[in-house]
Amino acid sequence: MTPASTTTLTCADGRNFDLLNPSPDDVSFHVICEHLAKANRYCGATPGQVYSVAQHSVLCAKAALLGTGSREVAAYLLCHDMHEAYLGDDTTPKKRALAAIMGSFGVLAGQVADSFARLVDRIDVAIHYRAGLAWPPSPDMLATIHRWDRQLLSTEWRDLMVCPQPYPFEFPSIPDVVVPHQRWDIAAREMMQLCRELLPGCAA
Image 1 (cartoon, rainbow, N blue to C red):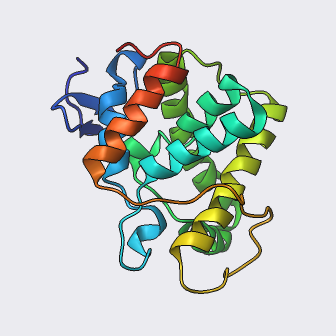
Image 2: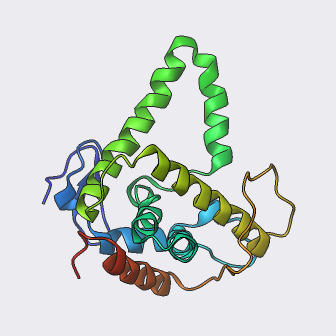
C-alpha cells in the first residue's frame, strides 16, 4: 500500500491513494463505486431526491451499450467520471466560473488550468490501466464518450429537475431511458457489478 504523504487521500477502505503519484495498484473499484455512490451529482440540487455520480456512470454505460452494442464504449463510459472518486465532482458551472476567474491571471491562466488537467489525467491513467483500458482513448472514442455523457445530462435534467435547461445541452435526451434514484449502497453494488461485467482488469 502507498505510504501516507501530504497529498494522500485516505479512502473508504482505509487504504491510501496518493493524488500526486497515483498507482494502479492502489486503485480499488470497490472504493470507487462506494465513493461515487455517495457523491451527489449536480451538487445535490436534484429536488427531493438523491442522484449520485455512480448512478450517472451506470446509466451512461447501459445506454451506450444498448445504443451502440459496443462493450468497449460502455466500459469507457462507466469509467469516464471515476477520477471524481478521488477528486470530488466539480459541476460545469463551477468549472466555467473558475475559468473566468483564471482569465484574470494573464499568462499564468493557462498554467493554472493545465495543472488541474494534468492531475486528473494522472489519476485517469492509473484507473484505466487497472481497468484494462487504453489511455488516452482515441479521438473518435472521446467524441463518443462526450456525446453519451451529454445525452445523459439532457435525460437527467428532463427526469430530475423542475426548471428548464439553463443553457443548451448540445444533445437531446434519450426517450427510452428513465433516470432512477436509489440508496447509495444499492447504487454502489450496481456499479460494481457492471465493473465486473465490462472492465477487463476488474477482478471479482
